[in-house]
Image (cartoon, rainbow, N blue to C red; front, side, top):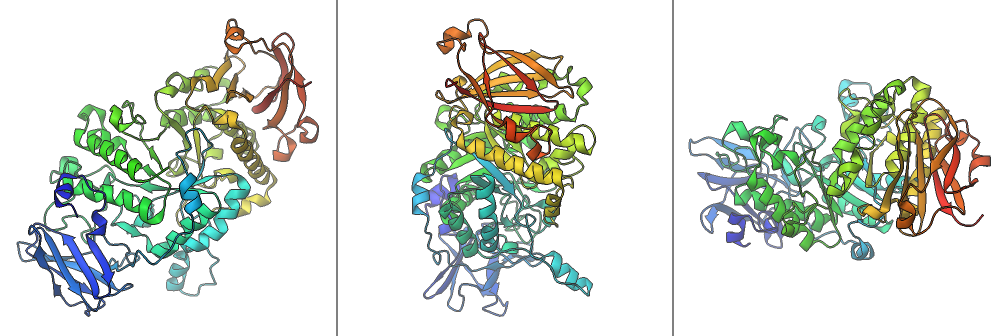
Length: 624
């Protein structure tokens, strides 16, 4: 390991040196604990008795070889402090850990699994000019194995803690994704974590795939299977903070080694500890961790959590920019892109900090995408509003295009929007049960036509009314109800159209890919815009009022637009390819009669019926 690079925060391979590596002669253990008085290894191979480690290199590292230790064994570091006390810690660079409440690390042979995804790895890319339809999941609650009848409290607890293993879930999830039109999956954090309710966002094992779902090799197999089926995988990565448990990173060597010593900036709003990004050893730890998931597991990208809390001290702009954390992000992102072909990096950031998706060498943070939290909040607030007041709030849905081209945005309806009393997406729709469905279908057609890549949390496609609970699988029984089954079928068709229609995504970040046709129908709550890839032209129409508009006139060539487009749209017309109001999805329109219906333009004007709470997609055609 490059020691100077480690201390200055320049390396991405610290995990290849630190931690535990099984060898023919046994297993070599190394840890970084500069303030420790002494360090020992205790484990299943020495009856949990101490095997002393020696100070090596510059005296800040500890090392030993234990011939009896082998892959599959458990171990901890016993770290003695200056005051004579000790703490038993899991390995910060360990490749596996026990399930909570236990916390020993596992010795893993990271060379045992061989991937079979070279074709995918060569062709993958950041999807900038392609479709990106992400299905976000929590692995423990998408589906769970059926539990046997439980006679005791202990048996009930074990049944609750029954999960599919990584590769088992892949066998179930891959056919679902292929059938329903998602080409990427985003997994909520997989690093080991002691509290189920943290969903992996407060970790103790940053290099340890959680043992809830199996082993490192089973995770590798899962990724391999996804790639062999043409589906990419993004991992939620947490570079901001870590769990406070004293067996992990907190006060690791008796001092604040990974965290800030000052509580004012050291403790996060989530009750966890903030990483000290100004420290080179911490930078090397996090950079190596990010690269580890990409390199060792072949993940295709990282979604980085709570970037707002790295840009600004404690996520508060009034406290100023955290320059060290910003420079760390720039260096890490540039290094990850250089080392891993075709990956994508996405930031969860709700601030207006400029240049999040600008290249690091050009002064940006180096992400490929930024979650558009403003679009998400404005859109959901609009649909919560009684239709009577949508006239007042009309431009909440046009505002996003005022700033859209400042960054490369991704449109998220994530797990955060369906928990903690916020209500699920379908439940957020205004009105009673039956009124919610047409609005939700129209909402999703608006989302998919709007520029920007897409992300949907699991269950949204079922019109899930119960808020997400990490302890339960999705309510798959909803599909027995006609409106839910229709909504599910609608999302399947919407996803298919999105993936197969370049007009939706080829020019997502080019001003030529989008044009408002009508965004001043405040009294009618009607919106219309065009999407194009330069060849196809798709017209998206929306009526978010509760009144049907018959023969609604739409001027397709505003004054001056015909010169830009090269010709007036006086010939040809449009073909209806999707309506949110079709009966097969729970609406009143007859799909059998309306699908493929051709509507001719007259003198550059289109007259069309717009259903209440409805949306239409029409494809431009010259052949009538």
